[in-house]
Image (cartoon, rainbow, N blue to C red; front, side, top):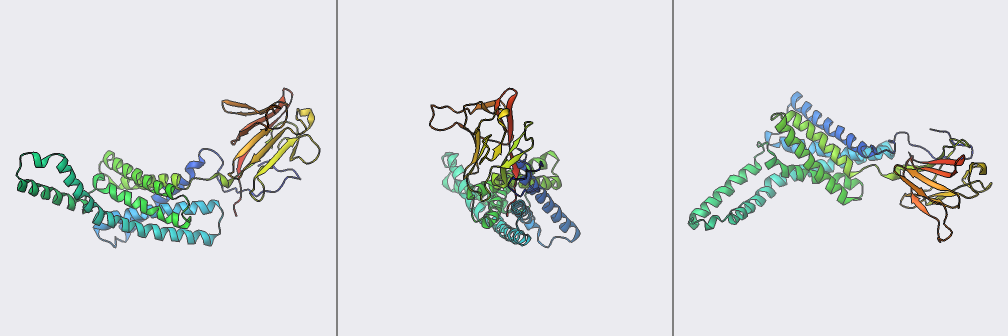
Amino acid sequence: MIPAGPSAPLVAMNIFLVPYTPMRHLVVGLYCAGAGLLAWWLLLLYTTALGPSWGPGSDGAIFLALVGSTVATASVLAEHSLRRSPLWKRVMLASITLAVSFSLSLFAFWFWNGVLAPGLLAPLVRLGIDSLGLFHAGLPADAAGDQLRALVDAVDPDVGDSSLVSLRYRLGAFTAVGLATSIGPLAVRKARGVLYHLLAGLLAALFAAAVWHVFNIVVGSDLYWAGAASACAWGLAFGAFAWPLPDELYAGWLRILSFDRFGRRIPIDAPDGQPKERFVGHFPRGLDVFLPGEAGVMEMHLSLAVDSKHRYFARGLSLASTNVRRFLERVNLSYDPRRAAPLETRLTSGDRIVLGTGDQSAELEFLMLPREER
């Protein structure tokens, strides 16, 4: 990190936060994927070393509930680790998330397999038989009724049979547990982002079920690798969608790249988090960044602002050349006297701002850097 000048305001930087690159969106997902894989391994270790303390019919419920609740807990731990919350707060919130998600997952698994699925599939079978025209196939009414009852009776036991390892019968359990595990993080996050969490739980469960099914087929009915792959897939999807890294964990900075005052940088954000505007020019007093007029910089040449939604903008305040350059794009912000307000453009990390032309020019860079959260 380039050191600040003697008059630059001090803004604490969080060295534990990931850089502001596109890969930051996968960081929490990879963290949760590792947590899901660890939960799968610990479950196998307990089962092989000590022996299961539950019946064979509960294997699926324990596996789904443990993986899903561990992934949900890892998402909460990742958030508060990046926010640098006190250790006692992390432990308390993680414990609440684990308890809520695990208990609701067990209930959701039982409710689907024991109550909802049998009661739901039987009417669907009847509806399907009616739509196929069974009663209009010339069969006597008694014969059609006996056949209908036989089909319904054949379906109901299969739904609740935990020994059937098939996506056809387990997809509903994956979905129910996925929705249930998303309630734990919602409880500790005070119901912020309800739709995101529910969709994340649903998508994570469906993705894990699909990966489990594919590995079970490709590897050759090997539930060992299928369980590991589905645990990783569950964590990757839930971590990436439920709580991706927000921009509020980062702060915008302006850095000088040209020869005059090279390396000088200032934060755009105000210390209290309120909207703020910083000014660049060669006027000797009151500006946030001073650059000499010999570098092609006017008295008040440019301003950079951040609003209440943590969005950053560059505004051209001079008739002189002012250009923002980014990949495959160039924005001219030179002030137009015919307009009532200066031109502005949204800034993204890595944008270059060139003030002036030719040899008499100064180049600036806008960066998003991690900041401390207390």
